[in-house]
Length: 292
Image (tube, rainbow, N blue to C red; front, side):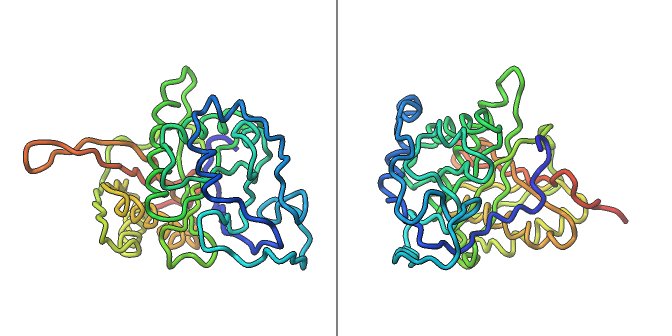
């Protein structure tokens, strides 16, 4: 429902059952087209792959046990690892898709501003559920987070502002590869906190598990945690850290999400650089924290 973060939505994947894979270059080209051009595209779902009309992943209905030879997973960004992705359809079609099929993919070459427009279109279309974004690799995750930050800023400028958030999780059996992430966007009823109690900095060489432990510990104490990162690898590590923190807190009835935004910070030579600030927030319905 609007305003409540998903209660530990896994977004972990299930094995596919003979479903064909979308070509990564075609998908990247689709996402990188201007938004107006994407909306005008009318594929009508005519490029369905062999192996059944509906996808066999999340929300799909492919029967178990079928194997048409395409079951082997490809080790590239074209494989959605079981998450239902309406391959070959326009963003307008995805915006009108039912819950569980409102999925966008992000490549390393995706233009964040164009992806931000696609996110906004999906948020406003059909059932109004925010999209799930698939990203594989640090560069893809970095572009996706930038797009969420841009979209969030734009949606706050509407007469009826929408507070966009993100619940990151690892794809099934991909915990070791911190760049294999699912980014479930959601809508909150209010904005995040304005000032933090704890500030963490993540670099390209930071261990996400260690940062996750620090985040989880401070959330248990009832603190407001901010994480800053600059550069694709650092941003990827920050997102992975929040994903790990969610798994650490899950059994305690606590769920967290992040809200990304751009921030300027000074550098040693008197200049400044742009970093991504992650406001880590406790989701609605989580167990009480900070209780002595």
